[in-house]
Length: 601
Image 1 (tube, rainbow, N blue to C red):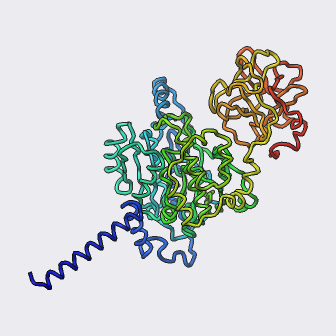
Image 2: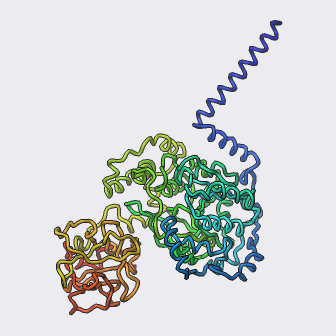
Image 3: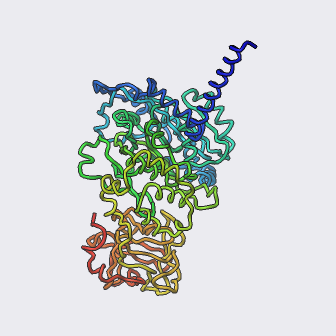
């Protein structure tokens, strides 16, 4: 071999080795090949392929994005469930099958099957939304829908609503991520249906094992090719012109995350109705998701997006660019729980903004029953919460830990990557979040519970052997009377009630509140909302009566001693069945009812 040729070969081998080593080092830096590919993609996008790579909407031109042809067509539709109307089963066979499927799904699957996959829903937006125009140049979207053992018709209705009510130019794709379902029809039959009826706009990704919501969303995000990621639950229906209101704030600033107004689809009749006209997402110090009233000026323009401290979690839009800048979700979070707090805190503390868009509405089926058990056999939610608290909440994490002794026993795992991310992005402290983003949160939800007005067991004067009891029931189920516990001040949890600082009565066994809508209603348990109304109660220690709502309504808690049920009846001081003894009474606070306790709403 000539000397020059040998020298050339040695030089080539050296260059190739250096290249391989460089690539391996880069891949190691980005932890794995997927992250490296993703980084290369976004660098390429920034060089000329992404929505944000060049100036957009320079002239600020806006257009009407409504699909009037579809609106006209849907207005003429008739049939079960059309226009979001409730549908009720009548045949005994359907009712029996529905009861069986309810245990599998937590909603009326047979009712869902009776309703068209492309049914019409009522346009319940504010009238001003119907005249609203949006920027002409908007980013494309990848809609990511995670499902696990979802019922066929509910899942496909979600898909068809997105396909039908999204401008084709904006909807790049729908990515269905199967979190290793166990129902056979969600494998080969679904894949065949997607490939024959829905491709190429809809793609299906099957996970090799049950991974949970968080990992599944990350898998869908890695597959996405749109400028914006939109996450939807697998039992939702998007409403008229839902997409442009979500996208315009992101087109104006890619670090804005946008949530739609979430409407209610009844789990039993699939009736579509509004939940409310807007509140701000928040949390209490048990990390339950809560909602704060709108701030002054938030609805001066009922079509304008307003700031929200925390997203509900299941429905939101975020630019892919910003999502990956934030590191996506913390993949140390397991199954579900805490992910909405982690992403919300990161958005705000690391230079972004989170808003709700009133003109974008999406209906969501709130299950009447939780059909899926714990796939891990351990309390993964507490571990998730601790990971979020340790990384993002600074000194305020202690207030969570004080409420739940499980935190002290829980190892959150390795947090070094998340802490490095926070340091690298120069994110603000949690104190800043509370002061600037949620200034009323500490007022509405004090870090430490103020002393209650009364607590312990609640004993019937009419029959002292009986006390209020949750009967181990859950939300929307009644409370009742049961044999009294021996300990007056600290009975077992199902008889441990608290007339709290928030002016509601809570049961310790499940942290639910006593609720009644109107006179003569049976008293039921409901999620505590701290908004008084149906859940406002007061104890008059002189008359021993428990008063419901404002005093002038004249409604009191009454025991039916024949059925051991509790009702709200017209107050009558002569009725022993309306008199009660609390295990512990704070007389000072009750005497100062008008000045102590949560602000009257």
